[in-house]
Length: 297
Length: 302
Image (tube, rainbow over all chains, first blue to last red; front, top):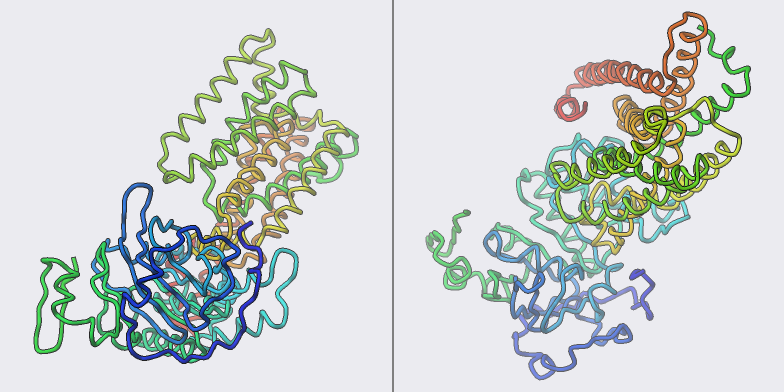
């Protein structure tokens, strides 16, 4: 199994001392072209203050390259928004960070480890509407799923698991819905439950795939609140989204994607009309003062 | 109708015990089939086990059936895992082709026998009344193994069924979980094949779980309900078939009667489910805060 415990468990309290400035993409230049064979023994954390490091990473399904030359660093307590049109490769990048899609050139490191070895410290939040609303699970059961890796095969959920699950549910403001069936909740509430499940896993890196799609204002607020609490505890967050406004609200950093990387850095530097026009190609783009509107296809 | 009198004779008692074990086993595994939406895959498996049954019988007589079925079950479980991982299951022509061609292979093989129709009927519909003590022991052993496996794998299997992407992201080997699922289903089919035949076993796997789902939204209740419904189906079916054959001169095949009783139980459960949702709605109407929720819940269940 790939889920054997990491050789050296990294210390718990990683200080959220993220430098606010962007790291220039070429800061890691000299070492970028070095050893491509990262063995499992490479698992010891080299730099403790980097959660996610992408070095000229190219990602491909078989022979078809989906993303090329992705380059950037995410520090503890920071959030990065992946922004780009449909089919730009946002979900693929998330899958690569999870180690589910191969990086064919360059590399992606999570907490100094290869993605597959870092999975225990990473939590993924899918889009709620991809899940069957008729599935017979309660909200609290769904949240407890976030503890499964920690619970293991034989043990029953213990006090620590129940506490973590209850606290996670409280963080998204759905404690009173614990016993309801997952499918009876609204779309936004379901998304919050899925975030609670991820929080219950106590991740150091959280990956969210389009969490704000079709989510009402109340739930959007609850999601943003919970994400900012996680960041305050030193977790890093990667959010793929279409919504530039939310990218501004929730994320310090922005990664513009459309097959290639069109920018990676502080939101105010990257979310410029020029960069967005480049990312979205010829697609309708309206500029009014400093506001940018991207037409969805 | 007497529910106990028929089982005074040893052969009827053995038949009853066999069907009770099978009902409980298939009810449990059936919940997994339901959650994974594997009804069609399961149906395919019941048909692909058939040539194994025939080959086992031709090679080693009555005692070869189990091992032939087991071999065929293992092979098709692996094959179906590969097939279904690559494409959408529900509209899959490949499954239908596999189902019919292997079934046809079984029919062709059995048609070379002299007692062709009797054999065919036995393989398709089983012979629950001739179950031996040894068969009972086999069924019981298989049940223990399957239940232990399910108990060990229950959490990964649940996560895989509910949210496959997250299961993979958490590092679970979903491919192995899928093989395990199909193997568990195959083993239940193999265990049931001599008693109820390849055709009727599908009902044991699908109907109790579906009926239980109609009665409850909670997994912790669905599993025991499915077990109870599976057991009741076997018991009432066997008793009905005995009653009709002995006391009323109407010969009812035991396996078929069991399936019809199960279907009857399913219809009852369906009515129960409608009533349950109506109660939920009425309760929700009493508390206006929850009204919206109840509306959604009644919209998606059933």
